[in-house]
Length: 281
Image (cartoon, rainbow, N blue to C red):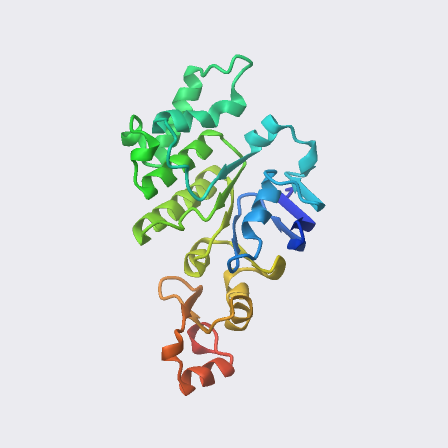
């Protein structure tokens, strides 16, 4: 099976500022892949370049075995759906109208929705639990509701790949888990590949098959949560003191940021010994 996404030696700059520096990775079909990194590490630029929203100055992007440059705009929209971090606050459309916009790449020359398109939109709203909000305006919703509506629009596109830019950033814990569960359901039930940017190391550890950790536009680490979420690697990337042990719910790393006022000789000694998940070297 061909990978869903291949990124090879991607370079990009904004003026004199170098954002991406020879970034390479691949994502398997049906994988839940999360990109991590501190602010300014190039995460958003990377997924924009990988999804065609930004044309990288150097490097290669392949989607389902074909170079990104060979896709027309319509064909690309049928293949990849992008969910932004948040919706503009003044969108004058109802949830049903926003979700139905996801059918645009599939419509005929006249751009008229058919019964099948409306049925798919209803199914997408049902899957993301926003069907009861169908007639509400997007700007009347809470942040979590708006995010689910945007996800419903992406599902309505029937893509092979969904790319999300920090979809849980402004949400409370319950809504964060709800969004993550919805994406895991898409991956498991529909075989959709999920590529996501996140700042939450612990949510990433619980849901991702693999992680990519960036710093200053370069790949610091790539692998499973257990391979990437190692305190030496994380401290090098984030520049702060972190402890890593095992999550009690699942055998994956759990990361705790250590405030300066809690640092002790014991903590520093434990870190120096290289203890990882569960307190074992």
